[in-house]
Image 1 (tube, rainbow, N blue to C red):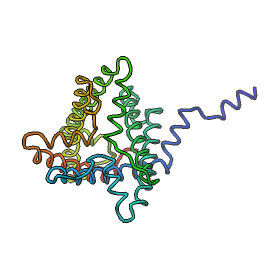
Image 2: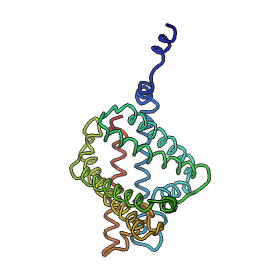
Image 3: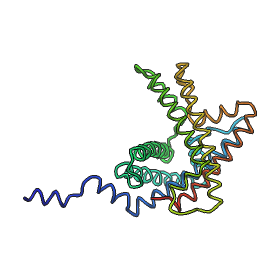
Image 4: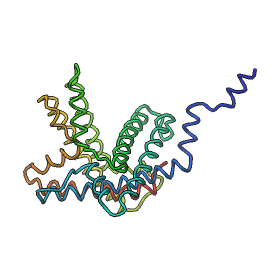
Length: 270
């Protein structure tokens, strides 16, 4: 019965994932990931304000934030710290998806998978900047949309993605307004963090709704270039009636979300 003894000694995949998720390295790395995510949101908010009130501003998205870091003093070190934090945050989301540690429902696992994809993609983008390369998040989104639409049923898929992003954005607004984000924390972070989180989730939700709308426009018009991610969404807000004021409010909200991420780094349920 030697093989049975080996089977008992060998931890199964779920157990291994549970142990990895509870390890000190992954836990602290996930908290670091939330902190650097907060920094990126603060930088995006800064760029969005420049877009709102000047003729320039750069890309108001993750690539623009990373480019700002790359051009700053000590930016290379911060970029590598960002890569490490985002990678370990993605690893933690992977363990959550496998074990369902904070919720066994299929929806909880699906959310973990979605966040895993987001953080892994963001880590890859940060790695490109850390190694001296650069990339455009809006360009990547447009290229991805064009690739999808080149296949049979691609327009329907792009439309479905748009509807999905709109739904995620609407949920962010709901989560912020109802303060549901407190369920992600192990204890109350203080009133200042609650107010920052509330404003942050609502503002980010509004931005995501516009991102989803641009996917829908791309699908209807068969123009992949319409889908330009967060940068395109914020520039679209800039062109709306009272656009600079509207974009300024969203920028303030994104900055508030960045502040909340700082609190989440400490109080997150990991």
